[in-house]
Length: 586
Ligand code: ATP
Ligand code: MG
Image (cartoon, rainbow, N blue to C red; front, top):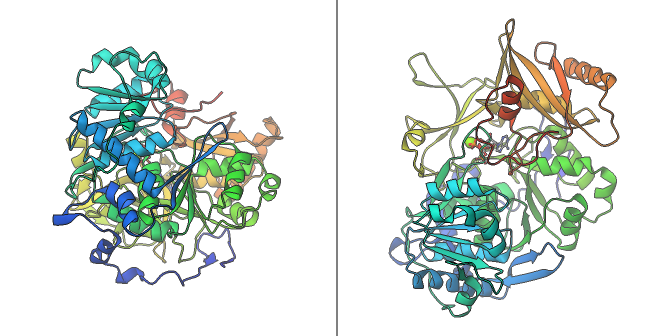
């Protein structure tokens, strides 16, 4: 049991950990040790699908539930590790029969149904590269990603195919096979019925002995700052997925685990498929979209012990009210983590008080393939901080001098770009079709993340903002996160986004967009109250000069606020790539 004493004071130690589960001490870690997490295949080969599924059969875990699937219409289906092994082998053998080989690109356009997980792992088992697409994308984002990825196979449903692929199907001659699930009698021309093929396929087809450096996954970034990039990941990443999930998610084989991210985003693959299955847990997959009561119901009924979610969802749970949360028995929850956006200290405090456990924030990117910084299970949480580098990860705060050379910032709390020493196994191996852009991310053996942050005396990292979003106002560097966090501390505020507007006097003026909680009226009096609240806690130079009320803020489909879109609209500039835009302001 942890003793929680969360304080809003950023520098204070917040949660005393229970250290008994952690035999590996941080500084004792070596990559050699990490290799004991995997079995590997003969002659140094390594295949993610083998590590995630087949090897568990040899350990007598075949009958254990691997996936507990909750369908949209309320029924439950389980897949044991043995069933998953057979199904993924069948899928791999279908690919072989079609002549799809190692390195060929297989795209998945599917909701969170068992078919998606089978296609992903079955493609890897065949040595093919899998690229999951978020099923709510429109036809053009799907076409452009498949074109960049040189798609050879698409796995989807008949409904999604007719609506989103058929309109442009003829423009992509390299797309040889379209495999459909949920087909009607009237199978569209040029498509194959996947279920029929699977029924006749070999359930024992073994995993292809891929080289650790072979390409395994192609993941597109969220498109928050511009056009999404296609990040390439190798089979070797699995090593890091397993290990990082121990440290940052406290994942153990006997856990019931729920990662709410869709595999269309990297979190939903690294920690929604690979890490949990490799660990041998039972993982919950929910097909439905967010609904507060439904989510609490899952946590209670399925007795989820480890839960990995995102700040947007947490803020929506907060918005749904404390009473709802308290109506459920969440006592099985042991560990809760968050990623994707800055997690405001207020949310950590709330979760401790209302859910009985604090959220552990962690930081990473599509490019890093796995969690880089975390408030570990075994260490104190600092609410509002992204935590410390994981074992084997070297992080730094850097800037460039006048000549462009890299300078390492040693001073505590000084802001610079967050950089990571190259060489961890899940690091991206390239941006597809964008070699120059890829090369520009590196300098002197360091990967430059594009995020600004600072580090405190205890080695914890604090997010300031994306380099593109940071505001320069009257000689101050204003991080949107800090201003948004203060606004969110006010009881009326559900969501906040802060941008800089060009100003002849101060350079950039801080402007905030705010969505209110139910029951609060967007009027002049509240605007003045919020302006005063921000000034009180931030000082006049950093506090927003203007606050605009909105019903919703524009977000990517992975739940990130698109500040660049607010800014473009404010300045009357082109909106840029909005292929990943989900909810929009009204
Ligand atoms: P694009 O690169 O296309 O603009 P994106 O950066 O949003 O999109 P992702 O790779 O999905 O695509 O997101 C990674 C980014 O999310 C990080 O660079 C960071 O800005 C933000 N992020 C992730 N986790 C955290 C966190 N714990 N705190 C603050 N920001 C976070
Ligand atoms: Mg990015």
